[in-house]
View 1 (cartoon, rainbow, N blue to C red):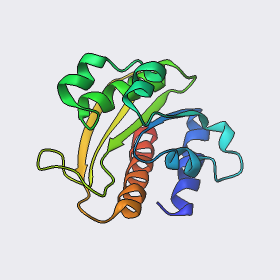
View 2 (view 1 turned 180 degrees about the horizontal axis):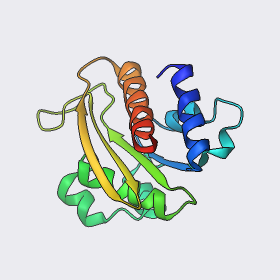
View 3 (view 1 turned 180 degrees about the vertical axis):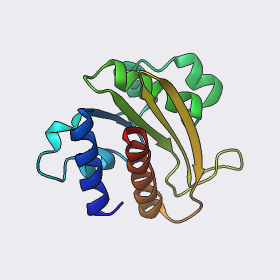
Length: 157
């Protein structure tokens, strides 16, 4: 997402008095970094959780061990619980989550480039999966970051 788009996100969130939180796995804090790159971002960004391991997802976000066992970390079910956990553990009105396989690697069942996202707010939680393909680790992570920022902009607009 371009700098100007993040500036629009900041402007829109501030105008609507909305705070964001994020729960990230494969992006390792890239969404939080993008949200805090601009001056004044403390008016829209409350906190971020980097929960790379399953244990961190359970401990910090309250993700169900049973959901992790049943669906795996890279699933819409886990993304939903991550977003809900970030929302519940913050002062934010909207939370976004990301969990995926940046690569290299993957499997036939869960290929490289598959990333699951969720948005949680008082209106509920929605999840989606994007297949970015075998772009390489760096490009998948950047694409996932940008997609999450676009989801936040859509949620606050």
